[in-house]
Length: 221
Ligand SMILES: [Fe+2]
Image (tube, rainbow, N blue to C red; front, side):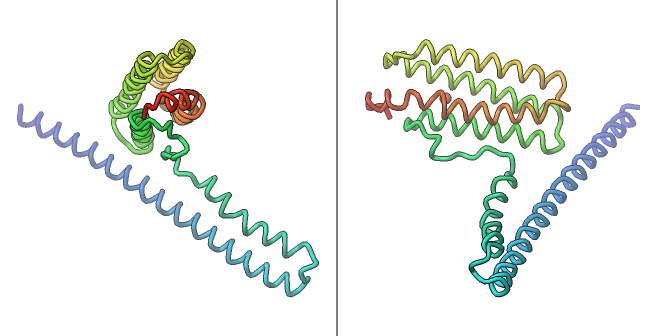
Protein backbone atom coordinates (compact mmCIF):
# COMPACT_ATOMS: atom_id res chain seq x y z
CA UNK A 1 0.00 0.00 0.00
CA UNK A 2 2.81 2.36 1.05
CA UNK A 3 4.79 1.33 -2.04
CA UNK A 4 1.76 2.10 -4.23
CA UNK A 5 1.39 5.56 -2.61
CA UNK A 6 5.11 6.21 -3.11
CA UNK A 7 4.92 5.19 -6.77
CA UNK A 8 1.88 7.40 -7.25
CA UNK A 9 3.62 10.42 -5.65
CA UNK A 10 6.77 9.80 -7.72
CA UNK A 11 4.65 9.61 -10.86
CA UNK A 12 2.89 12.91 -9.99
CA UNK A 13 6.24 14.53 -9.27
CA UNK A 14 7.72 13.44 -12.58
CA UNK A 15 4.62 14.77 -14.38
CA UNK A 16 5.10 18.15 -12.74
CA UNK A 17 8.82 18.13 -13.55
CA UNK A 18 8.03 17.16 -17.14
CA UNK A 19 5.53 20.03 -17.37
CA UNK A 20 8.11 22.46 -15.95
CA UNK A 21 10.77 21.34 -18.43
CA UNK A 22 8.37 21.59 -21.40
CA UNK A 23 7.09 24.98 -20.25
CA UNK A 24 10.58 26.47 -19.76
CA UNK A 25 11.76 24.91 -23.04
CA UNK A 26 8.84 26.42 -24.99
CA UNK A 27 9.30 29.80 -23.36
CA UNK A 28 13.05 29.71 -23.96
CA UNK A 29 12.76 28.65 -27.61
CA UNK A 30 10.00 31.22 -28.19
CA UNK A 31 12.27 33.93 -26.77
CA UNK A 32 15.19 32.93 -28.99
CA UNK A 33 13.02 32.70 -32.13
CA UNK A 34 11.40 36.09 -31.47
CA UNK A 35 14.80 37.70 -30.84
CA UNK A 36 16.26 36.16 -34.03
CA UNK A 37 13.25 37.32 -36.08
CA UNK A 38 13.47 40.85 -34.66
CA UNK A 39 17.21 41.04 -35.41
CA UNK A 40 16.60 39.73 -38.93
CA UNK A 41 13.90 42.35 -39.53
CA UNK A 42 16.21 45.13 -38.32
CA UNK A 43 19.04 43.95 -40.60
CA UNK A 44 16.63 43.70 -43.57
CA UNK A 45 15.28 47.19 -42.84
CA UNK A 46 18.83 48.60 -42.70
CA UNK A 47 19.88 46.88 -45.94
CA UNK A 48 16.68 47.99 -47.71
CA UNK A 49 17.20 51.51 -46.37
CA UNK A 50 20.83 51.62 -47.56
CA UNK A 51 19.77 50.47 -51.04
CA UNK A 52 16.95 53.04 -50.95
CA UNK A 53 19.39 55.84 -50.07
CA UNK A 54 21.75 54.96 -52.93
CA UNK A 55 18.91 54.61 -55.46
CA UNK A 56 17.15 57.78 -54.34
CA UNK A 57 20.39 59.79 -54.49
CA UNK A 58 20.91 58.46 -58.04
CA UNK A 59 17.29 59.15 -59.03
CA UNK A 60 16.51 62.43 -57.29
CA UNK A 61 19.95 63.87 -56.62
CA UNK A 62 21.27 65.35 -53.33
CA UNK A 63 19.05 68.45 -53.57
CA UNK A 64 15.89 66.38 -53.14
CA UNK A 65 14.62 65.64 -49.57
CA UNK A 66 13.68 61.97 -50.19
CA UNK A 67 17.21 60.43 -49.92
CA UNK A 68 17.88 62.49 -46.79
CA UNK A 69 14.62 61.35 -45.19
CA UNK A 70 15.50 57.69 -45.87
CA UNK A 71 19.00 58.29 -44.47
CA UNK A 72 17.51 59.79 -41.29
CA UNK A 73 15.23 56.75 -40.90
CA UNK A 74 18.23 54.40 -41.20
CA UNK A 75 20.06 56.35 -38.48
CA UNK A 76 17.01 56.28 -36.18
CA UNK A 77 16.34 52.52 -36.52
CA UNK A 78 19.22 51.35 -34.22
CA UNK A 79 18.18 53.88 -31.54
CA UNK A 80 14.57 52.70 -31.68
CA UNK A 81 15.71 49.07 -31.59
CA UNK A 82 17.81 49.65 -28.47
CA UNK A 83 14.95 51.49 -26.79
CA UNK A 84 12.17 49.02 -27.51
CA UNK A 85 14.07 45.72 -27.55
CA UNK A 86 14.94 45.99 -23.86
CA UNK A 87 15.16 42.66 -22.05
CA UNK A 88 13.22 44.11 -19.12
CA UNK A 89 16.03 43.60 -16.62
CA UNK A 90 17.72 46.38 -14.68
CA UNK A 91 21.37 46.92 -15.56
CA UNK A 92 23.93 48.73 -13.45
CA UNK A 93 25.16 51.96 -14.96
CA UNK A 94 28.04 54.04 -13.58
CA UNK A 95 25.78 57.08 -13.57
CA UNK A 96 23.93 55.38 -10.67
CA UNK A 97 27.05 55.52 -8.49
CA UNK A 98 26.90 57.58 -5.29
CA UNK A 99 30.71 57.30 -4.98
CA UNK A 100 30.49 55.27 -1.76
CA UNK A 101 31.54 51.68 -2.57
CA UNK A 102 29.53 50.01 0.24
CA UNK A 103 26.34 51.82 -0.83
CA UNK A 104 27.03 51.17 -4.53
CA UNK A 105 27.46 47.47 -3.63
CA UNK A 106 24.09 47.53 -1.87
CA UNK A 107 22.44 49.08 -4.91
CA UNK A 108 24.06 46.48 -7.18
CA UNK A 109 22.78 43.75 -4.86
CA UNK A 110 19.27 45.27 -5.04
CA UNK A 111 19.50 45.20 -8.84
CA UNK A 112 20.47 41.50 -8.71
CA UNK A 113 17.50 40.79 -6.42
CA UNK A 114 15.05 42.67 -8.65
CA UNK A 115 16.36 40.76 -11.67
CA UNK A 116 16.01 37.52 -9.73
CA UNK A 117 12.37 38.36 -9.07
CA UNK A 118 11.81 39.31 -12.74
CA UNK A 119 13.34 35.95 -13.78
CA UNK A 120 11.08 34.11 -11.36
CA UNK A 121 8.03 35.67 -13.04
CA UNK A 122 9.27 34.84 -16.56
CA UNK A 123 9.76 31.15 -16.03
CA UNK A 124 7.57 28.47 -14.59
CA UNK A 125 8.44 27.96 -10.97
CA UNK A 126 6.47 27.39 -7.84
CA UNK A 127 4.75 30.43 -6.37
CA UNK A 128 6.97 29.96 -3.32
CA UNK A 129 10.02 30.77 -5.46
CA UNK A 130 8.45 34.08 -6.59
CA UNK A 131 7.45 34.93 -3.04
CA UNK A 132 10.90 34.03 -1.74
CA UNK A 133 12.58 36.26 -4.37
CA UNK A 134 10.22 39.13 -3.55
CA UNK A 135 10.69 38.87 0.21
CA UNK A 136 14.45 38.63 -0.19
CA UNK A 137 14.30 41.92 -2.10
CA UNK A 138 12.13 43.62 0.53
CA UNK A 139 14.35 42.37 3.38
CA UNK A 140 17.50 43.61 1.67
CA UNK A 141 15.85 46.98 0.97
CA UNK A 142 15.17 47.42 4.70
CA UNK A 143 18.72 46.35 5.55
CA UNK A 144 20.07 48.82 2.98
CA UNK A 145 17.95 51.71 4.30
CA UNK A 146 19.18 50.99 7.85
CA UNK A 147 22.78 51.03 6.63
CA UNK A 148 22.28 54.36 4.81
CA UNK A 149 20.56 55.91 7.80
CA UNK A 150 23.33 54.77 10.17
CA UNK A 151 25.91 56.34 7.85
CA UNK A 152 23.91 59.58 7.86
CA UNK A 153 23.50 59.61 11.64
CA UNK A 154 27.15 58.77 12.30
CA UNK A 155 28.22 61.68 10.10
CA UNK A 156 25.60 64.24 11.12
CA UNK A 157 23.85 64.43 7.77
CA UNK A 158 21.64 67.54 8.07
CA UNK A 159 18.74 66.16 5.96
CA UNK A 160 18.62 62.86 7.82
CA UNK A 161 15.01 63.29 9.01
CA UNK A 162 13.76 64.07 5.51
CA UNK A 163 15.67 61.10 4.05
CA UNK A 164 14.36 58.83 6.81
CA UNK A 165 10.79 59.93 5.98
CA UNK A 166 11.37 59.16 2.31
CA UNK A 167 12.62 55.69 3.26
CA UNK A 168 9.49 55.10 5.37
CA UNK A 169 7.24 56.18 2.49
CA UNK A 170 9.13 53.87 0.11
CA UNK A 171 8.89 50.89 2.48
CA UNK A 172 5.14 51.53 2.92
CA UNK A 173 4.64 51.68 -0.84
CA UNK A 174 6.76 48.56 -1.43
CA UNK A 175 4.77 46.68 1.24
CA UNK A 176 1.50 47.74 -0.43
CA UNK A 177 2.68 46.53 -3.83
CA UNK A 178 3.92 43.23 -2.35
CA UNK A 179 0.58 42.69 -0.55
CA UNK A 180 -1.31 43.37 -3.80
CA UNK A 181 0.97 40.99 -5.67
CA UNK A 182 0.58 38.29 -3.00
CA UNK A 183 -3.22 38.50 -3.31
CA UNK A 184 -3.29 38.28 -7.09
CA UNK A 185 0.05 37.67 -8.75
CA UNK A 186 -1.43 36.87 -12.18
CA UNK A 187 -2.90 40.31 -12.86
CA UNK A 188 -0.41 42.46 -10.97
CA UNK A 189 2.89 40.95 -12.12
CA UNK A 190 3.67 43.57 -14.81
CA UNK A 191 2.64 46.41 -12.52
CA UNK A 192 4.82 45.00 -9.71
CA UNK A 193 7.89 44.56 -11.91
CA UNK A 194 7.48 48.06 -13.42
CA UNK A 195 7.02 49.59 -9.99
CA UNK A 196 10.11 47.90 -8.50
CA UNK A 197 12.28 48.79 -11.49
CA UNK A 198 11.24 52.48 -11.44
CA UNK A 199 11.33 52.60 -7.65
CA UNK A 200 14.96 51.43 -7.47
CA UNK A 201 16.22 53.80 -10.14
CA UNK A 202 14.34 56.72 -8.56
CA UNK A 203 15.66 55.80 -5.14
CA UNK A 204 19.25 55.85 -6.39
CA UNK A 205 19.10 58.79 -8.77
CA UNK A 206 16.68 61.12 -7.01
CA UNK A 207 16.96 60.27 -3.33
CA UNK A 208 20.46 58.92 -2.75
CA UNK A 209 22.42 61.16 -5.06
CA UNK A 210 21.25 64.08 -2.88
CA UNK A 211 23.73 63.05 -0.17
CA UNK A 212 26.66 62.48 -2.53
CA UNK A 213 28.23 65.92 -2.18
CA UNK A 214 27.81 65.87 1.62
CA UNK A 215 29.68 62.58 2.01
CA UNK A 216 32.24 63.67 -0.56
CA UNK A 217 33.00 66.78 1.56
CA UNK A 218 33.37 64.46 4.57
CA UNK A 219 35.85 62.33 2.58
CA UNK A 220 33.69 59.26 3.00
CA UNK A 221 34.24 56.77 0.26
FE1 LIG B 1 20.03 53.63 -1.37
